[in-house]
Length: 340
Image 1 (cartoon, one colour):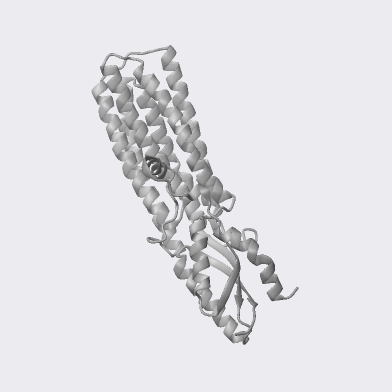
Image 2 (cartoon, helix red, strand yellow; image 1 turned 135 degrees about the horizontal axis):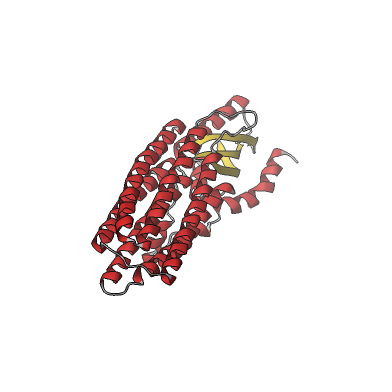
């Protein structure tokens, strides 16, 4: 089979794959779209990207450092209020905030590992450690939901009086403010550098912020004469965490399965097709390794001099680098088509 026949063999199959729409990334509208974007935000932002691998890791580590200290401060303040109030809903929120602070540690380690050069054993480098850290974050969030639910169920059967409810209200508002600041910061940086794990950690913080608001509701219910409002809110917090966690599981799991956003594939396809000398792009693959992209492409070029083909390949690689700032490396295989 000659090169032109190979192109024909792959063209139909690849065209369907490269341009198919991924239902997981369709844009929802209205309130559903707002809620989806709030808790399952995209991990890429082509308009505001950091194209240097070392700089992107530095940005990620800086975001983790700042948010870690903010969350630890919030957790300490809330725990002091738990001691003087006995609020189980606030305890559940405090445990979750503490777990959120701890998730920054493995992600921090993953960013540092990602800077290491590839070896003969790890030919693609250590970027996948970042995706494993994202999986760890999912597990920690799930465990914190179980702990919160267990504490709330125990308090339903063994109710205890609450004290200093106004302090509980204040602690809930502090928890929301601290977590929402961290969520916005982590998600923004995670999108810039293409880190699904950092975006997941930001969503984790956002969930914490809304559970802090739920604590405020529970304390308000107790003030109005409904003492079971506190453990009931604790259970609702746990249920909400589990439901909202599903979107994060899908995002992190997609990375581990080498899933790619179709929009990025479209950007790459367009960049290659508009490169002078490229007749068609029958095959194109991209995958994330941590927050960096790797790929492979087959391009059809005119049957001309070898030097002209090499120039076309170099130009194609340059066009891809401009279209995908997070692209670390791509293997481009030229095959010759009919002469012009």
